[in-house]
Length: 175
Image (tube, rainbow, N blue to C red; front, side, top):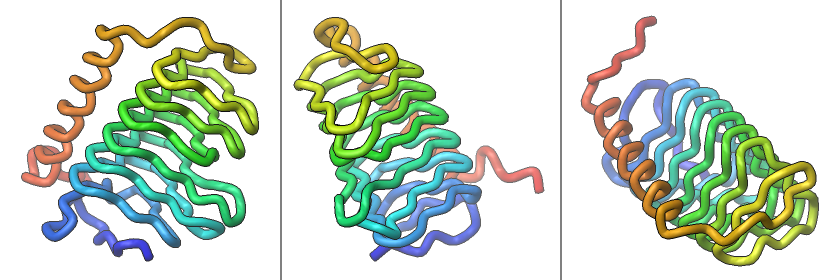
């Protein structure tokens, strides 16, 4: 079952994750340690469970949902950019879902992948580990580089730090 998150900027002490006060988390949603959920995210675990792994960053206006009876598994250390729609079966560890990307029913994103900004991963697509996909519909463009992986890890670290700064009251709500 989902953990209840108070309507304030705070990291829950027991679970150690951050959820912005404007995010809507409902149903069977499990959020792991150091995950951070930003403004206006919707995570609806009402038709199946959603599992958000350790140190994941789910950025502003993202929608997480899934098909009936198909759990959405977001592995640890996944970076999901602003305005993304993640409506698939699995996102592998260390992957990045770009700004405005759409990952649709039964798609599986492998480990260490990048789904480029604005890409549409069509239903049932399986993206192999370590690949960058782009376009509409998304196609494999190239292998993910060491530089790409370092960038993803750097951004994830910065978002964990930013979440802690919010928890510490450095960015209180204006109203």
